[in-house]
Structure formats: C-alpha cells, structure tokens
Length: 121
Image (cartoon, rainbow, N blue to C red; front, side, top):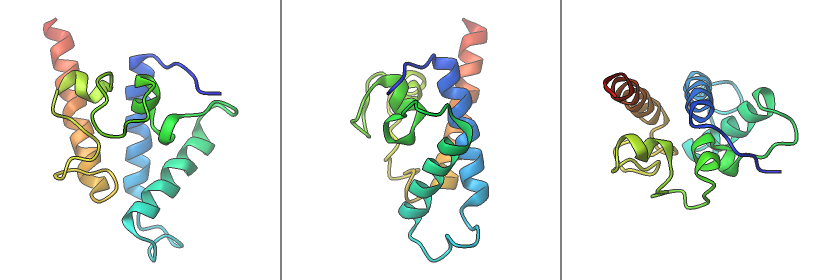
C-alpha cells in the first residue's frame, strides 16, 4: 500500500536515506556493482530497515511518494522542485544514480534554502 506523506516527513527521511546511502556506497559486496545498481540496492535496503512495514514508497523515494508520481524527472509536486523549480533527480550535474554524493549535497543545499525561505516567510 502506497502512503501519503507530509512534506516534513518526506524531507526528513529523504535526507536520512541519502546520508546513509553515501556512507555505504563502497561497502563490501557492492564495490563490483555499477553506481546505478549500488544506489538502487541501498535505497531499497534503507527503506526495508527504516520504514514502516507494508507501506510502499514509489521508487523507494520519499519525494516521489509525497508527489504521488512515477515520473522520475520533472514531477511538479516534488518537494525539491518546490524549493528550486529546475531541480530534477536526474539532472546531469547531480544525477542520483551517476553521482549519488553530489545528489546528496544538492539535497542538503535545497534543504538549507527551504529552511531559510520558511524563516523569511
């Protein structure tokens, strides 16, 4: 069953998930796999260990689930796009499959921008 998330829960868990992914990319047993395969394995593993049993996330992604979208590129309701309209998870500068560390850094910058915007209000 796919669930509905709040924006805050989506951000909190997305950041936690990607922090863990970037720390585990070079873990034994994953080094021989492509970056795409490593990311997909780690995304699913994080969800299995840290998310509610029986509740499905679209693409093992909190932003896709919040947006209730399968699009994987320019989801209009993506929490990242709400902060920066040009954000897309497959952007060539920070593609989540090809450059997971840069993708996580991008998420951190977006979160900082989001928090600053909410304080200004």
